[in-house]
Length: 221
Image (cartoon, rainbow, N blue to C red):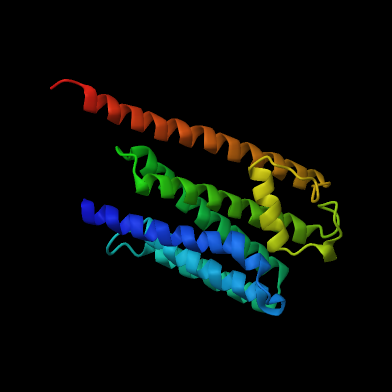
């Protein structure tokens, strides 16, 4: 069990590093000509490590799903086909949501509150924000120039929509980018509510587990 926990801790920390790089670092790297490729390479690594995070030993089915998702992402980026881009985005959302659900289940079943649980909780939140950015990108690509209050040529489909997703999920709402199209507005509401529900739920789970563990320690034998 200890060895298995170390396995999951190691890959969860690696996933946290990759997701943090994707969210916080890539956007301001001075390589504008290849910024989309950097995002794609980082996303490729995230998919592979995410599959490792929820598998152990010889379970290969998640790697097959990850491989299909990665292939669709790169092919759609090279060919620039709208339909293929939508299919790729749907596969990406499906894969990440599956990862989130499985991590939540494992977190809920865990009897401990340690490094693994805290890192998993952070990873889930970051992955939720990434799912939000992909959803916003689908809407933006479907109705460019109509979804947000900023001209489409002024918005980077990766950097700006990642920023907008996390500003929305945290309910910070600076207002520099705002949804103006009904679908974009509904999506913004969904993302913001999801973020608040998750934080409420995860705090309750972690605090409940911690208090339960403390009570078990203080109970007389």
